[in-house]
Length: 366
Image 1: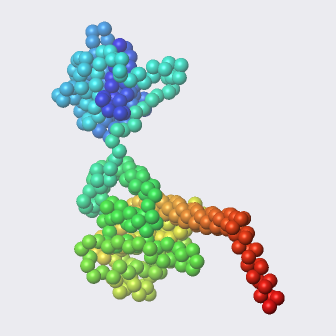
Image 2: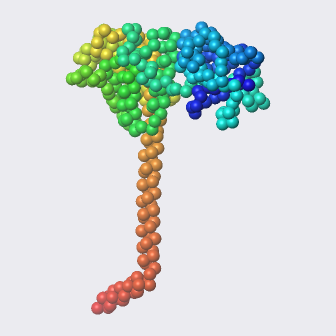
Image 3: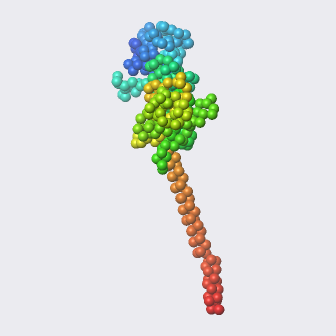
């Protein structure tokens, strides 16, 4: 019985038994073997198993099919042949060795025609593989792909990667700086500020700020009117030229710093707004779009969740440390009392008390 090995000789290795007749490979769920890899086409290839042998046929895939590193349209498969669908590595074998994995779907009582097991991609999407050095002309998001559909997919992958990176248990200050570092890596902006609500005063206070490396001497101000509007309304704010926006035409910081374009989005948890994320650009050549604001809002939602969890973790950590300190004090006090009680009960100490009492009595008599 022939088999197809997914990601051979790796921890992700999976074995698929090839049925008699046609076996289809591709990203679509209706394929015989579903391969969720970017470089694999929706219907990438067919493997035909017959009494005359096993043939593989490329189905006009975008990234082609290779057998032993040779691009093929149709090719007969031999035992041990290396197959590549785009960048995805597979291996064809006529039979399995004892040490090899059990084929997917071998447990027949658990499987039916409506159940399909799909291997997840081996390589996680890293930010450096998704973002470019510079943004496109119509957005400040630094997406490598220029294909609109692929850009949508890459945005989701970027947000997923950001979420994973923000899950680490950093100190609150370190987390805020990490958020800004990721923001500058993903979007082309000059200046960003995270403002959080102080628990006592209930006022917005700047907690972290970042400036583009070459903007020396910029005072890193922001519009109080803009951040307060975003905080109080809970809405995202975007302006192409803050100086001409009637909502902020009397804002001193907007006029003084010549803020051309800015966006400000609330940092929301499930129950409340805990702060705002503010970004701006000084160049009149930069124009923000609704797409930019939508992406910034999505990123801010993840940031807000991470900040909330970090704060709660920090509070609980501090509370635990205080409880441990109080317990240590109680233990020390109990130990002292125990030591004192032990000393007091010694015969020697009892005799000293008796001598002291006798001396006091003599003094009283005299």
